[in-house]
Length: 102
Image (tube, rainbow, N blue to C red; front, top):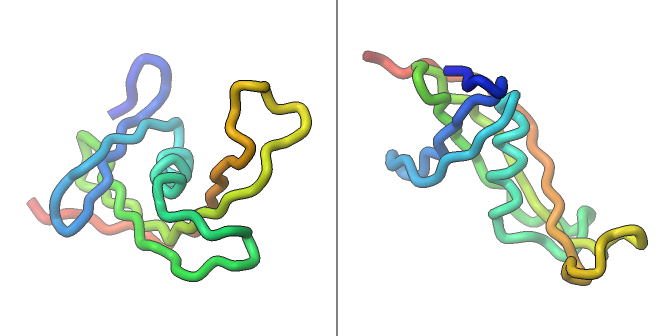
């Protein structure tokens, strides 16, 4: 279901349980937020494992499935002073959509 601001809520499904809620205009935006919580690799070239992210869209029977991974890198030169020296970046690749049975 779409909120007034155009964003939708997606619930992360882990081991059959709904654990966290991420919002975004598109499912990929919510998947990127979820992927940043994964254990990050030291660099984008050293990605060891990719995790499967299953995001159920609230108010629908759709489950968006992504393969996600994360890594750390040094912050940009124009980043604010209060940021840590290293930031976590993420990427996702859509694997498909499943529909839950009623």
